[in-house]
Length: 117
Length: 120
Image (cartoon, rainbow over all chains, first blue to last red; front, top):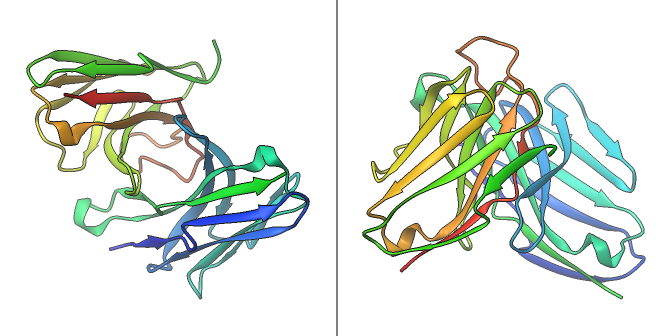
């Protein structure tokens, strides 16, 4: 059974600093890994998706890396801004043996990021 | 309207009420999903529809009943809910290039804003 962990649960950093969010997963046989952000009371916004054959993806100030062998992914945010304050979730897509082999998306509990102006 | 929309955005209901949540996607996708997000718990997948057929039901209580009349619309019918069902309910869609079978097909899911449900 896939388990996804995000540590720390909360993080506060001054504006302008670079930061890294961590995501670890127990089953390395993933199809892909996604990073989302969620603003309070809102739905999820997809940020980056890394296929299992890829090592990283970049979008603007965001860079996500994937190391399947160690079961880890990181989300790097450069030059943080107050608007980056949100909860960041990672999710791993794996095959669910208990459900006839259908794919299953397993989410972590998220890291609540606060950028201090 | 673009993307994935959900109505209502907020809903308060009693335990004996019957209500429905609506999701509509304007992305031309053929797979739709219902998720539940409770406080301090990981997002939980509830139901998946691919090509308008339910392909996954993650042991969800029968008081939640999904309906997918076409590829653009998804409903979640609610009846005799419990206070612990209070949560944010999120709808998502994606493009599944396969027919039936592999439901997520390695493609990004696009989420709606969610419905905040409170059961009194």
